[in-house]
Amino acid sequence: MQCKYFGSCGGCSAQHISYETQLLNKRNVVFHNTDFEDIKIFSGNPFNYRNRMDLIFHPRGLGFREKGKWQNIVDIDECLISNDLLNRLLKEVRENFTDADYFDLRKQTGTFRYAVIRTPGKSSSISFVLNSDSTRLTEGIERVKGYAKISSAENIAITYAKHNEDRSISEDYFMVKGSDMLHDTFHGKDFFYNVQGFFQNNPQMAEQMLGYVHELLKKYETKDALLVDLYGGVGTFGLVNSELFKQVYIVESFKGSIDAANFNINHNDVKNAQGFVMDAKNVKKLNLFEPLFMIIDPPRTGLEQKALLAIKELKPKVIIYISCNPAQLSKELPKLKMNLKSVAMFDLFPQTPHVEAVLELTRD
Image (cartoon, rainbow, N blue to C red):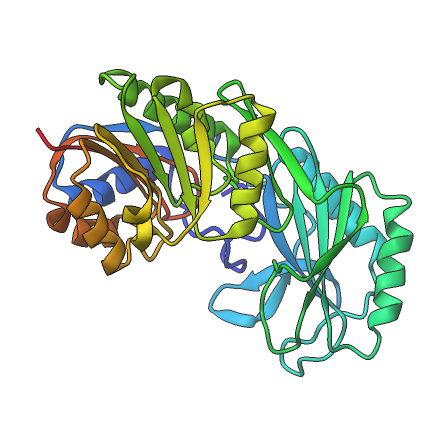
């Protein structure tokens, strides 16, 4: 085991297993939940891959929750699954906030809760999550402003969370330094997303997965087809595949993500794509046409029942289903009543049990 915190930190749980065995175990998880034998396996760096970490302030500095004891924090000075820039910023924050008025998880008092550090390929940010109910809130804000003047991070935000809300992102924030939009490039296109928003944390594997899905779709006759990118976020899958289709709809319930998606559409000069703020269950309300292709990338909870029924009624020609929860996926596959043509697994989270599965479903 390379990490000195393994066993006490609740983050990684598979470092005692060789990486080859980790991949085999994950392959078996996908097989068990799809009953598909020929699973393509994609992997990358087993360490130094993450570009986001939500670090918790505590009396000794910054850390992660202790394994099995969520109210205890393990002090961390380096995280081996994080990239080098993230670890440098971790060190920088530790050195500048050694005596911070940390938030006590048991008493629910104090100011500093999280330092959310993000280091995508084209930018870096630190979001300081502060207890909005703290009696020392003003002092905390001024301290962050002072640090921002010397920090090597390009963007610094202050995010508010109430004392009884355990959250590391929020729409209640303001920028102390730089922009609230982060930037990365995939498959030849630029993607901007909000500092508080979701984005893939393993860029190397995200690039592989985007390329794989693109190659899957290239096999079909799509020049007169519609692609619906459901749970589309800031439009990554939709825009990467836009040149293959007549029209692309990016559907996402979070307005901030669709605002970013529409910005990305314009920035990349994509003429045939459009973003819609909409729950997946309402996708039938769009001006759809055939042939219809769908990319579906739901959260861990999977498809809600009404969304699943809507997709089933639409009878798309092809669905590319991207799942971070194969156990939930196995419950939905029979209900979709489509043919499973191919399965791939992508190890976006080495040293953990989590795995991403990409399924190609067809109607013929």
